Image (cartoon, rainbow, N blue to C red; front, side):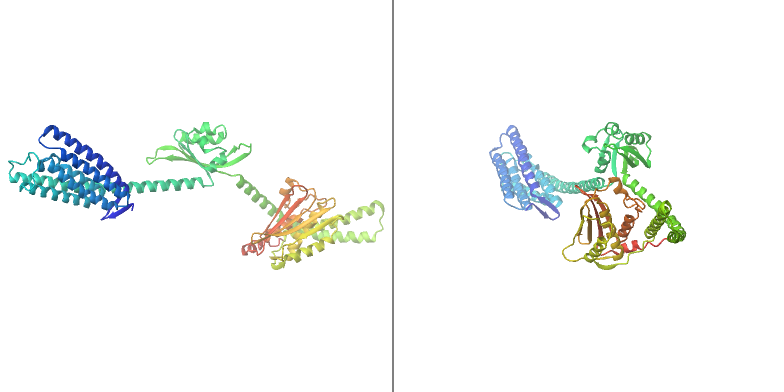
Length: 566
């Protein structure tokens, strides 16, 4: 039993063990010194019994210490040793001169110990026991039942003087018990408050450190002497430093060589003692790359409003700048697309008339030589222009997907039937389709998805200028998505070209419109999926379509915004 509550007090084994150790030391010092003094001043008193009592007191302490180790409840141990001490102290008073003994105040030591271990009730309880023992001994001595060795010191005293002597001792005992118990209670209460405050402070410190260390923004704190106090992991990553290398150093020494602009901003705020609103600066990373930073600097003040340092909060704006550029690009493309769709409508009607008239002239006129070649060129380019306009209008007018449950195996088989009859499938090119074990039903627009799959298959054929193999593989990604991968053995794609593959009118093929992949990407995105492109390690490229097996409602809502233009 480590601790036990008794009438509002809490006694634990550790406290009792400390008390027993201190008790032995104090007993040896006080009683031992008293014995020496008695030998020198009152030679008529035999000190032999006092030595015996001293040894008994130490033995009692040792017995209870062993008992505590063996499992004796701490509160029982305390009360028992207090009673034993009162008995020993009464005996000590008897053998050192009776009621007039200089050791009569030794009762106060037990009362104080009881007050601190057992609080007010313990102090008053032992004070009551000590008073009873002291008064009982006085009565027995006055009646001659007990006679202390040597002169008692009470010979010749009147009854009133003896009563006053006893009254003063008893009053002192109760006063020591009450005051000691109250002080012990206040000390224990303050100790608990201090422990709670330390626990709360530690918790707040841990919480604050966790918050700072897990923030996505960089945080750097500098004191009034421009020395770095703390830096969080995000700031370490952005600034390219290690915490243990910079904490305690000056800003100029630690950051000046690496990010001079940032260090200068911190020093200026510290000197001017003014906050700096969020603004943008540019720093150079260790790999030489320019990094835009969003930086805010605040003055760190104490409770009296005096500046103690500065706090810098900053973020890497690289991704934000890329996103802004994408949004600007999307806005430009949207505006151009809307304008182009109107222009395409206006061009399409006269183009149809021109193309029809040219066809009539080509069939009726008997042309030869250069004139016939020019006429054929006009017819061919008119058809090409019409195809570009049709592709563009299809891109601009892409309708929302009409969702249905479709067999993926059957859909791919239909696409490869169309591919085998397509001129793009050159001689020497093999095709292989690796289906999942068991058919998978996917919810998508079959017509639109066939268009996407056929477009990627044709592109794979056109990318191969020699015999090779095109492989199509389907596989599950998690439990909700399907991945369809087209692999060719062509020459691959340049890294700069990969970044622009899905831009409208960007093409690497001679005679291409640059709209095929843009339309395919738009269809896949309308289905809640995406197209991924990468070059294979040895040869060729790989296009992967990832689409959900069951398109969520929010994806449908996204697709519904693709209303026809014009």
